[in-house]
Length: 398
Picture 1 (cartoon, rainbow, N blue to C red):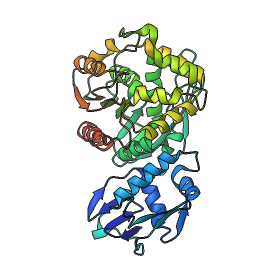
Picture 2 (picture 1 turned 90 degrees about the horizontal axis):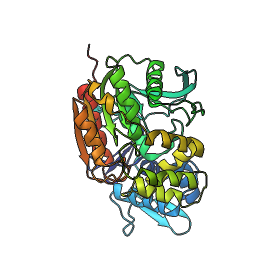
Picture 3 (picture 1 turned 135 degrees about the vertical axis):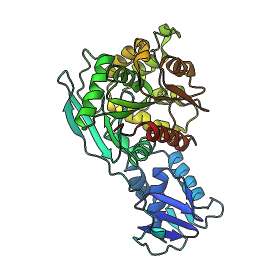
Picture 4 (picture 1 turned 60 degrees about the horizontal axis):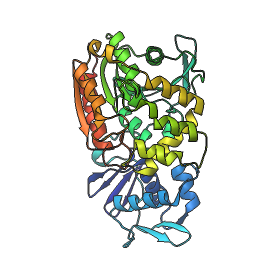
């Protein structure tokens, strides 16, 4: 279904916006706001309706709403002064004032468009220790296992702009399996006896449950550690790896002021305290370049996914972890992506991985963020680089 207004074409099925025939990059929440307005032309859409449609009714700050409105106006070639497309009605809401053409189900020029991804249903399997492991499976194409950071939530992340953008982009060309680590999300909460070799076994259990034979890995942050162990110990299963924000050794092992781990102190003091200064300080450490609202969405997902004690357990495990002895055994192609000014896990950690893994390449992002965020201007090129590497090296060897 398509809506035409001014020089814009909004494709509801493909979740795309074009202006004067050229694609316009829009974040999911901005797209949802534009869609809400074009589907209600001439009517004043209230703030409550906007929050319900764009944020699922969650509590959201006025600054976040204002930022999405400004982005929506920019995307359709409007601005707050002209308001020729989207008009603000003081103390009431927003109004689509541009003339909207009737929708049509035919794609322009007969071209096929990518379909949006419906949030997948959660499935369950067991790890080798008999614990419950929650996973999801979606998309079509060569298989990719997403080994992500601790306290991700395979259920909640579809309501987090950055996470949904990443997953939907991967699903355009791949069958993707994601899972919650033991101790977080919908997986078994008991972290007794968890080790990094055990985490690698959990990752393999998720791949097996998804029906993957050989597969590629997209690893994020601390997910690099089990991904490397898995590739080193099961070279016949892993085709290639993309590692974003990865490192070879934890905080204590690399000797960078391990006696004063301020991240652990932040978790201890503020993880279970809504409204505490914890969130802003935590995000400033990991995502100093922002945008703050995008980082806050990820942080709130993490806070809901894992209890404080499990976060502290994970932090201690991570601080003392090392995969240095596994690096030379990784036989598959590896792409490392890392922020140039990342202060939590410095670029030197990625360089150590690149020097130790025989077929590794390093791509440096001009950013201080630990991982790219929606609205930072880096997410689209980051995904292009990731998908390009997966397309080149992740094909079926047969």
